[in-house]
Length: 134
Image (cartoon, rainbow, N blue to C red; front, side, top):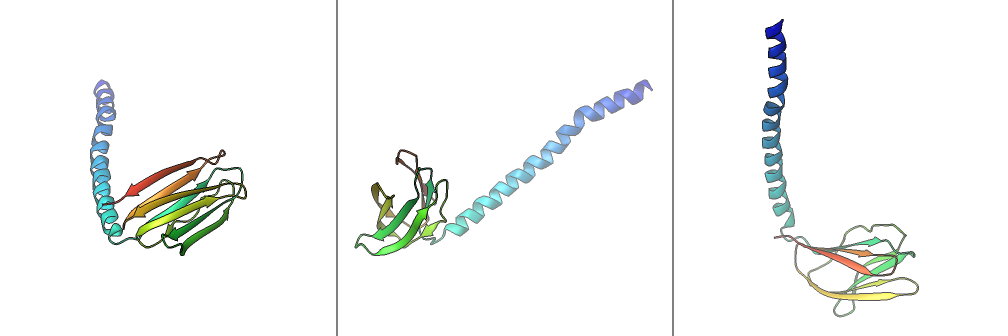
């Protein structure tokens, strides 16, 4: 009985160590696979923009090239809404974010595989996160 109790305690003590090793290898392998998939997905991917509306009004987004030609449009994104990603051709674009009472513009040069997340808060202040994939 004494040996049985010791055996159970030893098994209980060492069992988590054996389970962790195979799991960490699986996680590392998944990370490598995901990294290679991301690299493959980025090849010649058009730049894109996504808008998150935390403002007190519906917000619209116009994406125009430097000649003023409309490339993409998000009309009156509801309060708390997140737009779909809007892709466009690489180059210099003008992003116009507006409500019924305010307007802001951002002019940027985009390359392939660039993604821009734009957030707008209740004071109509913009926050941006440019993601550049290599």
